[in-house]
Image 1 (tube, helix red, strand yellow):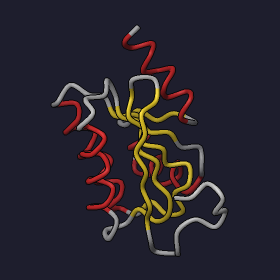
Image 2 (image 1 turned 180 degrees about the vertical axis):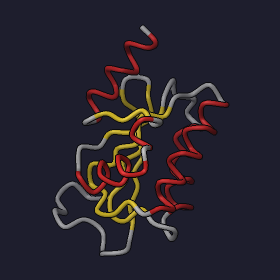
Image 3 (image 1 turned 120 degrees about the vertical axis):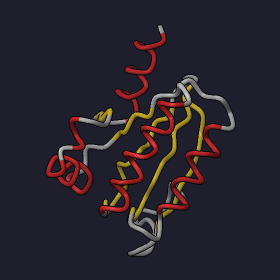
Length: 128
């Protein structure tokens, strides 16, 4: 993802970027999170864990499509990271993410926040 690229990835594609912020790893995801993107997003989460963060924040603010495979990934990643003692928080206010999570009831299971700053505040509150 390039900050000067307002268009984002091509339709059907996904881009990820990992950065550290306030002791957490932030994995920014842009594009379509469908079956073809699962391995890319999962790989970025694993990369983020290599820095031993106190939490992983998945920034889904630039996600255009969250397919069922993407929702399954979010649930599996949440459980996997919980088993490792690292919380996974989701940052997304876009309807493209919120609506499918609400319809499936996953919004009640996943740690969902409006944006990255609010997710980082939650991390600080939990570890402060």
